[in-house]
Length: 421
Image (cartoon, rainbow, N blue to C red):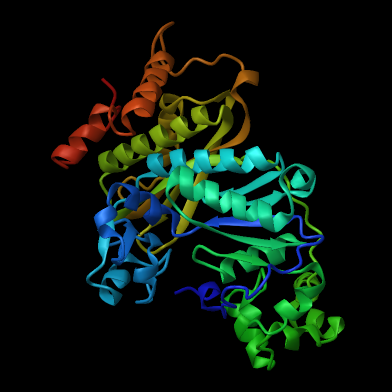
């Protein structure tokens, strides 16, 4: 269980709902989202500890059911540790396509309520429902309606925090998990916050928490009583001011409907360190395929391609190249990534992780028509768009480069130069 999940939970609200006057901000968070989506197809696993993530020796937990969390399993934990804590857990692989489809449907529910939806990830978002009150009722009623529609239409549950600020709303949704609804009255934010541990404040990581504990500050209320100048002297001007404001429930941030992606990419951590250049190139090919698919799905193209190369000793280097024209083609991304890898001089160095990323994004419709390297008039572009259509209909992996198929079948580490046939 993570530090944030260890917060005291207030339990269900007794009697009538709390006063939601002035509480136009909702934070909606799906409950154990990846696990919940998997259980739609595996209902026989309900009630059992289930973990979604990479099963290899360097796999990481992406999500854990609440039954698994009682054993201490949580997201971002190494899978090897999760298996030690809960050996009876059922481990399922990550299926991003399924999660994206359910997420898109959930966000359609949000946007049917208000256009002011700020997505934080596939499974959580802020909503500003001030403009929806005349049409749909009070914020708490809107929150209840959203929970019902998500459950009825998608078969999963969510928790909703209702408050006057984003920070309080997000904290409320965390405290009422799973499958809960918590309203924090606008005038009750300080009473709600002050009994909580300092770790509940946005921006307090483990090191900051340790520092505050050494100062004798264990609750938000204790921190709130410290003079601003003292906090700034101990934590720095920016952090001190930030925590002082949050401790008194002040958060001026508005719900921002859309923040454009700054970059799109993918990474792979190997089960064992790899020093075979051909195996590295095959990995770069798979990552370029994922990145190109995500670019096209979002209607984006990018001008800068970068690679991340992490060695066995955890030293990490990045290399980047800016192209003459923006691209959304995996072929261009792959060739550029391979050239960057070769130029880095690490072709015989053991690597534990590689990554591919495209930056300096723009809408694909605004990008000039670019040809892939050695592309004929009808070639890679048409092939990649055809692959997108097949993947959309039959799922990702239904069609892929031959080199990746060979790796999946025999893992012999050969023939990764190009990978397309």
